[in-house]
Image (cartoon, rainbow over all chains, first blue to last red; front, side):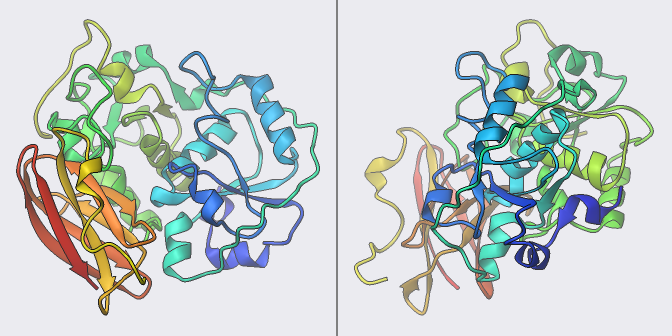
Length: 279
Length: 95
């Protein structure tokens, strides 16, 4: 798999904007951003109300994902292009989620909504109508999803990549600085985790750095890419971006995203926690 | 934008007790929409928000020295701000 199989630029999207077999999907942390405007013909997926189980802390199940994509007019043979705000955090999360349920052709728009806006490209408020489909999802591919026991088992044996900011890693903050400081019961990080903030993967405009720069980043941080890797953040969206970099752009095998992330781990009873800056 | 409120968002809407950095982004004296990044004292990225329609932004942070970087179509600008625990730091950024 090459970079162009999984990542497209804005010119590519503009060239395919009216292609009925290409479905552009906006997924934002701010789920109201789509209402203001969006890329022409883009549909919206709400990372919270569409992708999360409404009762338990978990994803919608296979049947729920099928219903969602059928209703959005996405077919199994469509190419899905995901983009969003916040440097594609939630678009990356949705990308990982689409792969979890086995969708074949998924791509990210490099730079997401921010790059599109900074380039002053067109945004519209018209909501497209797409005919419903009969989407068939596969069973979850748990080779790319880590659960809490996987995170604990990875201590000292696998690469643990904490992609939060240094202040969240050290325990100074519990959440990103633009969000209220709430969530887990305890601050800190999983012992033996390396702190490689997601932001190091991206340029200021939200585009990904080159493959060479990305590989060097992980080598410099003493990540042995021959070993299995678990990436985590606070709720699994920033670490989905790092999963995308390692698994999709760099082609590293055995990378899992721990979507429970710090809000789960930092509330578990009895697990080891480290405080302080990266060593 | 005509009639835009000067400075950052309404301070009465701040979550009590939070260490807050907020302000507005302008170009030629007029509010401009874009993105604002918060970098820590080592220059490391910490957070980013889109500005409101009137160019305003807000971060909840911690005590310390921060850099606030505005990104708008065709330009960017940095400002340094010192935040006190539980306090409100206002920063105006002209791009």
